[in-house]
Amino acid sequence: MDKEMSYGSDYKYIPATSIGSGVGRNVLADLYCHTIQIVNICLVGNPETKEFVLVDAGMPGSAAEIISVTEERFGTDCRPKAIILTHGHFDHVGAIIELVEHWQIPVYAHEMELPFLTGEKSYPEPDSTVEGGMVAKMSPLFPNEPINLGNHVNQLPHDGSIPHLPGYKWIHTPGHSPGHVSFFREEDRALIVGDAFVTVKQDSLYKVLTQQQEMNGPPRYLTTDWQTAWKSVKKLEALNPSVAVTGHGLPISGEPLTTGLRKLANEFDRIAIPDYGKYVDGNLH
Ligand SMILES: [Zn+2]
Ligand SMILES: [Zn+2]
Image 1 (cartoon, helix red, strand yellow):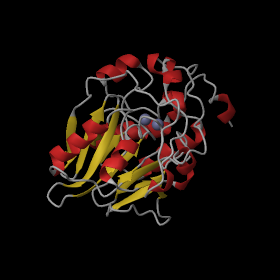
Image 2 (cartoon, rainbow, N blue to C red):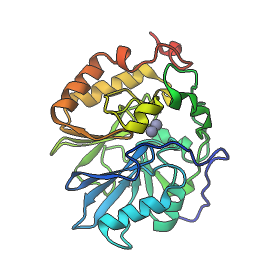
Image 3 (tube, rainbow, N blue to C red):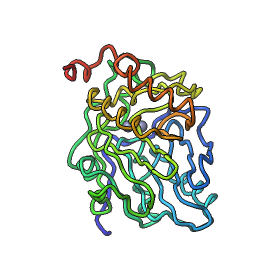
Image 4 (cartoon, helix red, strand yellow):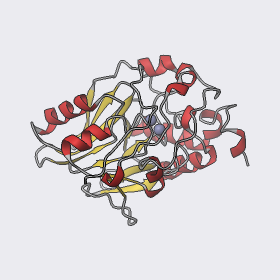
């Protein structure tokens, strides 16, 4: 754990927010979700045992907020056992280097996401021409260069288990990014989705700002393989989750989740896939 880490040269603070920013929610006794500007992080684990992990690492510049939220829930000087990433987009790894340095803990991600986390490969440019709203239009601002976590990042075990997160399995849900994963606990059918689907229309500035709940596909401006993204939504729907925390938007549970996810899985082409955009046509079969 001594290799130097770095963000990409296009790394920067992004001035976008929502009314949910700074708000935390107890979704389950051992699942806490907190919104950083426009993205959610999760603290998974029981506050009594103090055994927990952090899922995703927020927006650029949010390390102090993430540390204070963590200490509020688990106690001063408590630290997660690991950071588990759903994927490596800038809004999910924004504070990761400061967090790894502060806590001295390992990071885990799917092996197909590692090139974007070890400085090898940039994500495709965000598509500002995609059908959608103001957030899509401002997406050229978003960093897409890889960060480099060096030997601090490890691949998730092939057997589906997640280090330091007993009871959960990772599920490969590509399409939004190649190594995108979601986390599912069979026992109570809790699902940590990442961006495989979200509960807010993430390309619309107004709907992001107000966090108007609306079951939707992955954020449009960064999704590059829509047919694969559709398959991933069907895979998650088949799990029949009872509660879902998404990377963007409010947590959702019960009937609205079941109905909304079924509708999204059935009508993904109508609801989620944009009518136009540079990553749309190439994926039509
Ligand atoms: Zn993403
Ligand atoms: Zn995201």
